[in-house]
Length: 88
Image 1: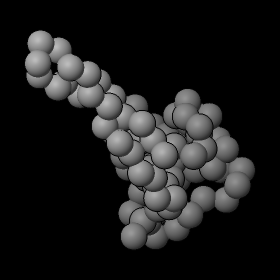
Image 2: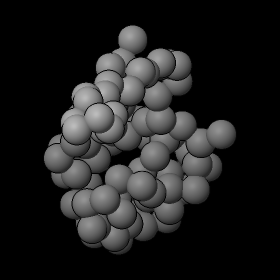
Image 3: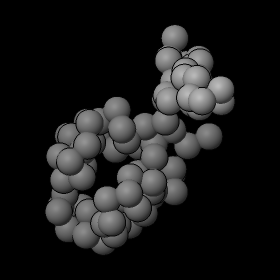
Image 4: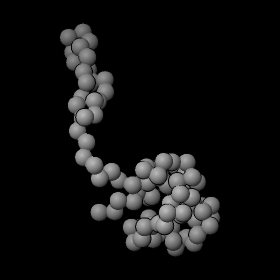
């Protein structure tokens, strides 16, 4: 399982790997290897990537911590409508 979710974040931000490579001063091949999960970035590169993509470093990784949630409902006109989740 690839825990580094760079491909997803690039898509969310509408940025290409080529653009990211240019902005963090590495080769396109380096970014491609990160996207494919063939390598993990060094700390300094990770910080640059997060800065350029304007995300928290945590957003670049898949959470490995299990969370549980419970749906919150309200009664509207006799019908229960979900309004959110409570994470525990």
